[in-house]
Each structure stands twice: as structure tokens, then as C-alpha cells.
Length: 470
Ligand SMILES: Cc1ncc(COP(=O)(O)O)c(C=O)c1O
Image 1 (cartoon, rainbow, N blue to C red):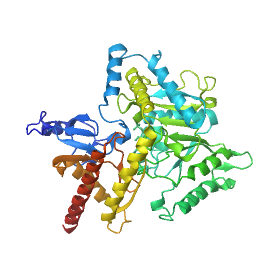
Image 2 (cartoon, rainbow, N blue to C red):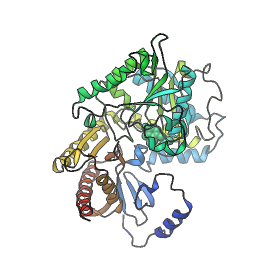
Image 3 (cartoon, rainbow, N blue to C red):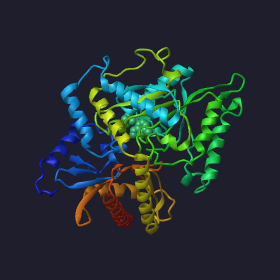
Image 4 (spheres, rainbow, N blue to C red):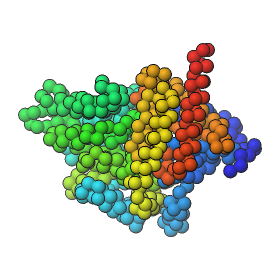
């Protein structure tokens, strides 16, 4: 791709207009200098000059199969020509096929039967899961995790751990109780996964020890909480990977106390971690699975829940229980069916595991050269790089922020080409570079990614040192 000196659109003029007419309430202005992109393909976004930016976050893991994936684009174009629109009160072929494919996938993974209900966005599907739990258990309080993120609608905010997201919006009477997640690097037993697991299981267990924990009535055997909402690997929380046995132990406690398990796969589902459902790594059977993002490879918005038959059977969750105008839209379901077909055609279990291993080995090499990288870890192609001060422990948000900004500047010389780097930041201290490259990332792109990552880190270190002197 040639980099032209004359941008096809006047970027500065557009940015000026944006400042006047667009709300700052979304996440665009997290960046110092918001960026306009014009094109995307494979692992790359292209700016108005045609410059390529290697994307290591793929729209928060919505675009697992690469930008402008030809097979998915073709499926959408075919649907555009056939049935581009249809009110959701009527049925169409792809909706039924997609629901069946998802049900089969859950049955294969967990041996469970259930049904699928579609919606538009991830948060809305979370709301539907909340309704289902309320309906089934008659309880409106939920358990969730510190560091957990389930979206920003009102219901989803109430079970999302960050108070910052609720602070300006009044009372949330049904706010979840947030429990510690086994985050080994920052637990009271740093670096000790076994002790971290033990500590977090103990904290959970204690809720049900006697009636004065505020969670449980031993006389009636009722918990005040309807469900535990969990992300198998925390996404926004900084790609925190729990010890392998942890969820099995938690699931047992939940089952013994009538607390349902809601598995939020919105970010980690669809092979991000090397399994169709990330919870498969942990040998746990969920009651409800929530999905979104990767279902359509980030094309027409579509999300949904799968629930066990007894929770979602027509006799208990009847017509009109939940609805949104654009739920099960025909372009989204066409994309979804193609995504599921693509996942059936290749062995993504092996592919993602191998690519993930290779990427993580490269990250470990980089980490050996920079004490500011406190930890690198990964499950499949969900990888984390925790940025710290030079002691390797004190969280460094400013270093992570700098790396993010430098990547967006688009002037990294790698392999004789000038590119940019698209990064995302997560973590409890907003100091973790969360890496979610395309599942189709090539070996060459991976090499480039590692070189570019180290380059932005070196520059960020130099930059922050200079800032410190000012
Ligand atoms: C785990 C998880 N749950 C829920 C959501 C909310 O989804 P949406 O942004 O589509 O509303 C997200 C989005 O990042 C997520 O990562």
C-alpha cells in the first residue's frame, strides 16, 4: 500500500467538526488525539493517508477472524440481495440455523441442552440473562467479581465492578456483591497461583458460613443471590487468567447454595482462548452463556444468551419476555452462520493454542529485556503484558498510556516499512496491554507485532523519563 501525501479526506477539518457535534461520553476521547481510519483488512487498519496499523486488539476481540473477512462479507452481501431486513417478529432461515449451531456447540462442549435468545449488543444480552435469573430464582441480587466487566447499560453496570461507571448515575439498588478474582500477580500471595486460588475460594466459601455474612439463610437454605456472573478470563480487567482448578471449586459452592452460574463469553468466546467457549478450559458447566462481539466477527451487531432448557423453556420464559427491534437482524444472523461455519472448517483449538504459545514466548523474550514488564501471560490468543515502574511491580498507567499513544502515531519503522500499532489498555490499574490479535495472524505479522511492541515500549520509556525531568 503506497502512503499518499494527500489525504483523501480532510482529517483536521473533520476532527474539528467532531469536537463540536459528537458527545464525549463514549470512549473516543480516552485518546489524546482521536484517530480517523478509512479502511480495514486482515490484521490491519488504514488511516486517511493509507498507512497501515497492525491491530493487536481487533475491536476488543470482536473481529477474531480478521477485518473484512471475505467469506463473512460474501455471506452478508448474499443476505443483502435476499433478505436485508425483516421485523424480528417473523422468522428467517439463518436465525434458526444459527441458534441450532450454537445449541450444538454448547451440547458438544458441556453435554447440555438448551435454547438461544438473540439481542443486539453485549450489555443487552447481559440484561436478558439478568431477567432470566430473576425469573427463575425470584432473586434480584447477583454475585460478580472485582475487575469484572459486563457492560454499561443500567442493569449491566450494576454487576460491573468499576464504581466509576456508576458514580454519576445515582443509586443502583441491585448492585452486585463483588468478590476477589484469583489474580495471581496482584493477590496477597503474588506469584503463587495455588495460594491465590485457596485464598479466593475461601473468601467465596465464607459467604455461606453463617447467616451474618448477609448472603445466606442456613435455616431456609436460601441465598440472597440469584447468580454468579463470571468472565472465565477477565477482559477489561486485564486478561487475568485464573488458576485451572478455581472455577470448578466455585461452581461446586454455587451449586450447593442454589446460585446459578452465568458465563459471560462476550469477549473471550469464539476461540479467543483456543476453545469455542473459554469456560471449557475450566471444566465447569454453566447455566447461562452470554455472547456477542465475535459472533458476527464484528459485523452487524448481534448478541445473545444460551440457557439450560429448564430456565428458558417456553413455559417459563414465554413470548415477549424480552425483545429489541434489531434483535436477530438478518444481516447479523447471516454473518453469524458463516462465522460458525468457518470455525467448523479449521482446527482452531490447535491453531490458536500454537499461535498463542508462539506469541507468548515472544512476549517473554521482550519481558526479559525490560524490567517494566511486570508480567506476561496468555491463554490462546488472549495475552497480557502488565506495565509497571522499573521495580516490575508498581503499576505504571502512564507507561501503558504512552505506548497506546505512540502506536497510534503511526511512525514505527519495522521491516523497512512505516506502520502504526493498535493497542488496548485494561487492568485494575489501567496498566495492562491486553492483546487480542486476529486468530489468523501470520508468523510474519507476529514477528512484526513483537518488534513494534518493543519499539513503542522503548520510546515510551524514553518519553516518560523525559516527562519526569520536566
Ligand atoms: C465480558 C464483556 N461483557 C459485556 C460486554 C458489553 O458488551 P457491549 O459493549 O457489546 O455492550 C463487554 C464489552 O466489552 C465485555 O467485554
